[in-house]
Image 1 (cartoon, rainbow, N blue to C red):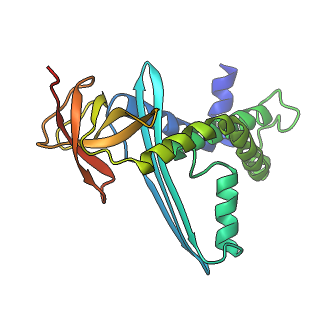
Image 2: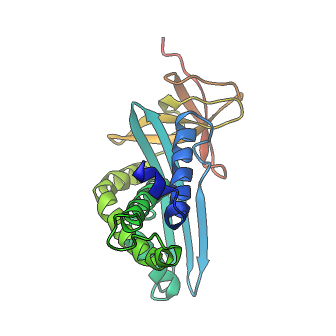
Length: 238
């Protein structure tokens, strides 16, 4: 009860709200209410250089949590300017390597935990749960949580780099995969396939817009570059 009271206190309510949104997102993905590319993030920066950052977040839950990421960072010209510095900072904290929503989930969970620890009746920092003092703690909390996120996600970096490398070097057309997230009518699903000894997850749509059930094998027949997904059709190997 004390935790609930602290979570809904004005000093912590904003971070509780954001953490709630994160939980709603994951539950929506688990139960198929959101497409895999619902929160794709495209960032274009032009500060004496041309930078394009493209992050795709793919999540599938099937007893375990499978995650696929596609992140590209292109820089033309000198990266010593402000844009290059910002990209360097983002890369240091594993943005563009680890999926965006994984990073955001850990970041907000860390910020919420620190905020609860600082702003509750038994705290030595802000026992009165002053909103003004809590606001002053927000920036230090954010900085500390970014480094916590860096430490927590660092072991995931080699895995996602391997997935990214395998995904970029391979043409999926003609390959056989298995549906891990069912394809609803006119909605994206997800397919798991093996590429260069690595398991890769890709966004897919059905060729005729008919639903395809989880676990069914499919043939990848076409790539939709603009939509960042592939067209598949059911495959029967019998």
